[in-house]
Figure 1: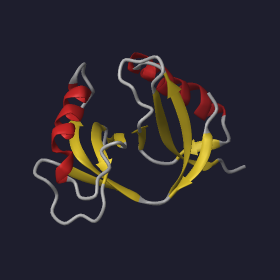
Figure 2: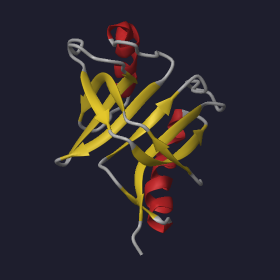
Figure 3: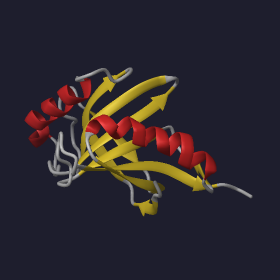
Figure 4: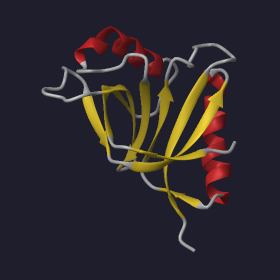
Length: 152
């Protein structure tokens, strides 16, 4: 699984958060609620979603969100997460969601330790666009991992 190395301009994601480990169905419930409430997010594109995995102070957090335009007040019960401009290793996961954990393990257990990059942040995100097809072998999800080149 070889990535593309991409520089991405800064952006902001607004959405719903789940604290702690992801249990069966908890991710789906967040996305379903976001689907009902996406119009509350200014200038959001409902066809592009971000599943942001963050680890801060030993606590896991999953943000199901959409890229937001200029924000005034946050919609009730939602949070925002800003991302500065950064370099990412971008991996393509093809297939069913059940195989996604295997792709993620491959990135962090196999590719990253042997690559010429270090992880550069306590997060990564899933990027969903119109190629994502729930429960389909033809589905495509992009995994964006913040990296910096290793110093030699």
